[in-house]
Length: 382
Image (cartoon, rainbow, N blue to C red; front, side):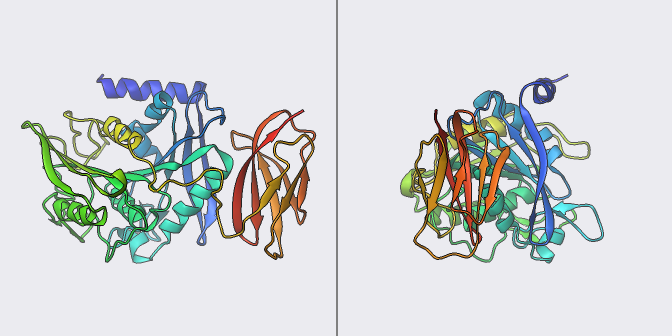
């Protein structure tokens, strides 16, 4: 049994004994959008921690990318939250796909609003868990990697960095609001998404732009001054870097001589290609993510979700929380969550809520005013 499989078995044991996993869904765009959430061992919510959004490949699922990547085990070791969203299923098949522009399958053909789903999912998770809004990252393999590029283009106000694996970018335009750091992984043996470009050998018939072309696009977007420096070329893999970019961002590209259309250093899927033994994408992307935050950063204290600004007072409090806004509204609902995401209180149509019966500690309150949402951390005292 190889080392990666040992780590996977350890992760499974830990998941069912200490850490927390939840398969859940939210309604969005007329679909019941599913996801699997993994909280790290010992999560208390007392401090804000990173979130990684891990996107499966076409025809795969949350369970499969969790297994092949080992990200849940990494989350337990390094203390971050990882969520595995799932794409929609096609009408004539059970294959889940992401709308990444020209790629791929039913989600692309039907113009599914997957970007909106991920945006909504981030809002929901941020209302339930203590997530650092400056450290939200996305990774994905194959179709999921294509979609990670789309998130960088269209959700750069929330995604600090991406790590596409065995993928390219197929969008008519890319105009992010902020620079986004990128670490890309590929194999010279990948025939489904050839790194030199072209139509792949799989079921998808779209054209894949060369990876160098995609990185050059992003080098211009991020205004990188040091372009295409080869750091390592040892016959096993090539490591290239685009650095000195706007806001301290950078782009890194790993191209291995082994493996194929797979997750480098991960677990081989039943019908998939062999994996690279020269690098470990999970370890490398986590090291990369730790060096890059949203830029310019958000203010955790002042950041609101939606356009309504609401004052929450007194905070801390031992009895009632009151909510005030100068903006006229029709509907207001207030929900209180524990730091582990359990909803414990809700009120509708009132501008205050009594928390006197709650135990001393930290909670999150979600205020929904006419569909605009604000999340605030509150403290209950004696």
